[in-house]
Amino acid sequence: MTDATPASTSASQTDWPRRSVLKAGAVAVGGGLLGRFADARAAGLSDSDYQGLDAWAMSEAIRSGELQAADLLAAALARCQAVNPKVKAVNMLHEDYARALLAQRRVAGTETQGTLAGVPVLIKDLNTYLQGTSTSNGCRLFKDAPPAERTSTLISRYERAGAIPFGKTTSPEFGLTTTTESMLWGQTCNPWNLAMSAGGSSGGSAAAVAAGIVPVAHATDGGGSIRIPASYCGLVGLKPSRYRTPSGPGHFEGSFGASVANVVSRSLRDTALFLDAGQGRELGSAYWSPPLLRSYVEELQREPGKLRVAVVRQSLTGAPLEPAIAATLEQTIKQLLALGHEVEELKLNIDPRQLFGAHGTVLGTALRTAIRDREQVLGRAATAQDLEKVTLVNLQRAQATTGEELYRARQSFETVGATMEQQFERFDVILSPVTASLTPQLGLLTLDQPWDSYAHHAMGSAGFTVLANVSGQPAISLPLGQSDNGLPVGMMFTARLGGEDGLLRLASQLEQDRPWVARRAVL
Image 1: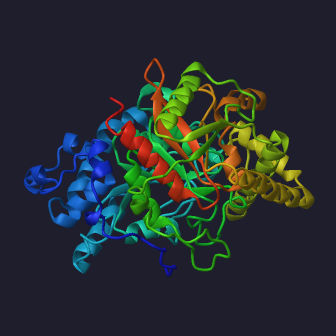
Image 2: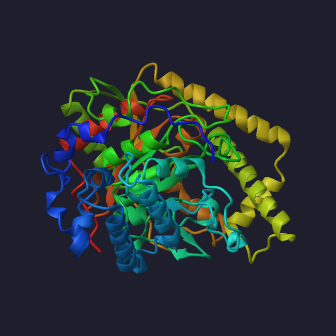
């Protein structure tokens, strides 16, 4: 597949200063970076050693010759076999695909090339494709979907940078909720507490990273689906600006740009590394984000300067903050002040009815289109045996949507986006919680329940996140707190359109000040 070359895919990572690496508690050390793995080829990479590596360290070990990509793939598969029965994060294994890719690189002599050389990754099983494999979208209607003819552009970029996709992660049906539970694949558990949800809709990806199956997993975000699972699972989750990463081939935006793709990761440098590899205009697309001045990895080494930070405390759904989330917000404000930033309270001038109405109209129309396309292939209409209760309600509502309503929803996207951009004339970033409530117990919020119950339980999870999907701005969830019972708590920072660089500079400062990489779920 032909594709435009991603802009600014960064300088060699081996030249990157290790200041934040060491402070973050990674295993990398200068001079013989991973020398203790010298016997890995003969003895195999142990699970504990594998767990100690983020994607950046893995790739450097591959390029230095201290590990081979086959070692990392074997360790990832072994870890998956050991813990996936507990967390149920990986629903499809594509080991044959991964090994064929390794064999091709061996023949071509490119095994050690690329900034992601040899890094095993997982792909979210939602609107994302790997040639020769199926994508189910978490839905029984797509259970027997034919293998994809092409690989998604973003995944192709990861592969060209050296990554090795070897499986897919669970998603709720069509990504319609903030937990990952489906009639098709069951319940995905939070590695921090197996009775709790991993969040959604990228809950499988977040659970796989938190459980140590991979250091980084592909994720998508149409209403908070990167940031919410990252918050619930103690990870970094960056939703890029609208059009920063590609959505093709075949279409160039998801839900009028509300849905974008990136990754969830343990370390901030892994997030930057994958965004460098994936970002940039796609050939044929009429949309793209501003070009980069520097690679995102380089941005991590730059000081953020003194920032004007706005604090938003009130969820747009009106859900009150649970005590652990309110306490983490106060702790984060104190940390920002101690680092020299200015902090000011802000009440957003956003009409929740306009915001959620437009978002629902657009995502509902996208859902209707996906189901209609599948019905045409199958030659029959979808039934209650194919779709879950909440999905059926969404479909019925979407069937009544007029062209005028869809056009006005698109106008609302622009209105909300302009209103938010005006805030960044006064402020550099906006701080808020990711969610108003902690991760729910499994079974509390599903798509197989009455609409009113679903809507009630969803209020605490998406009241902060949907705004950036409608407005298009980048937003990042950082693992900055924990509840009294040990559940992670994320805080969210939002920046102006194209402002991922500023978010990463601030996030790097926060990570260095209070490192989080060493905090791990224990299965």
